[in-house]
Each structure stands twice: as structure tokens, then as C-alpha cells.
Image 1 (cartoon, rainbow, N blue to C red):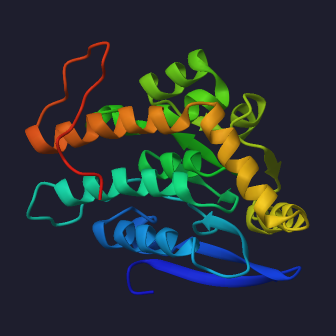
Image 2: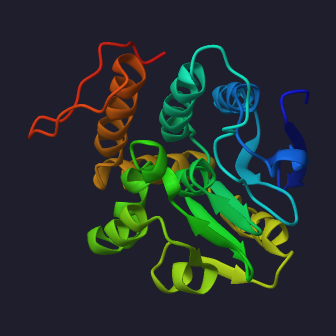
Length: 251
């Protein structure tokens, strides 16, 4: 695809898997406006794709994603890019099939957030993450990370923006499998093939139940509201018990 994505389909059982590959090697798979818009479109179309049993999100063999493309030439100060990020994270919540991030190399900032937004993460041994959003405003990533690793660990990773290697991420439960470098995509497809043996409606219902049970939608809404307020006003909302609210419509 011309938006920096490459889509592949892999047969599994009586259906198929969709492999969505970030394909901007010249920018280390940085997330520009076109790529984000393309991802939103791909994820929007998942619900109407017959026979789809799972989705893999991956990058190149050397890097998952360097995060938001801060070198992109924009005429709105990056407003549209930030709006697309919030829309993307909300859209991920509505994907009815299991999603797996296959991570090789670094996943930084928005790239770490994309990995966090998936249901499961499988990483090559040399992979590492850094939730670097604190450098550029709201430290994106806590909304999902908090439910996956616990409050104290999420605060550590997000507030320091330090590098977190695959071994530590595995030990903390953020990564579900660490495989030899270069093997994450194959392992992700194998995991989804196992899941595909179950009844699709049951899998979709359980996925929704897990997300609702942990309050994920509320955490994502709070985070995205803060990002939208920053986009609209140029500054973060004041912290209060009610949380920030944005006047901007979701879609």
C-alpha cells in the first residue's frame, strides 16, 4: 500500500490471518499521517472481513517502529497526526479478532503504544521498548500498560521513558513470548493459529469481556481526552478528579 503499510493474508484452518506490516524502512517505520490513516482504515475494515481469525501487527526485521514521525512536514503543527493516533487507539478496542504485535528491535513512543494496544505481544530476543511520550507531552502508553504490568511498573516505564528490554518486559508480563531474534512473526502466526481452532464468536466475546472487565475503555478515553485537549488548546488539561474532557467528536 502507498501509505507505508504492507498487507498479507495467511491461510489458517477454515479462515485466514491478516499480517499488517509497517513498511517505511527509510524512517525506521516512523508513524506519519498517511500511515496512521491507513492503519485506521485497515482496522475499521476488520469487522466486515469474512473468515478473519486474527491480525498480526509487525515492522521490519531490525525495527518495529521509531514512534511518531517528528520529521514529517506538516502545516498544522501535527494536529491531524495526533488526532489520528487517538482514533487509532480507540479503533483497536473495537477489533473483534485477537491481535498480536510481533516485535523485532526497538518499539519507541507511539510504536510502543501500538504494541501495547494489541492483545498479545511476542518479541525477538533483541527487542526493546521505550514509552517516550513524556518528552513530547502526554506520556502515551499508560492506558494499556497499567492493566498489563500493574500500576508501579507502568509508572516506572512511562514516567522515566527508559529502555525496557525483552527479558524485563517478559518478566513483568508485558510480553507473552520471547523467541530468538527474527522469529516473532512466525511465533505470532502460530499463536493465532492455535486460537483459530476455537469458535470465532466465543473468542470475540471473551476478548470483549476481558477488556471490559479491566476498565480498558475508560483508561483509553481518559488518555485520549488529554491528548485531544492538548491538540485543541496547545496545553495539557489541569489534573482533577473528573479527568480532562475534550469537545472534539470522536470520529
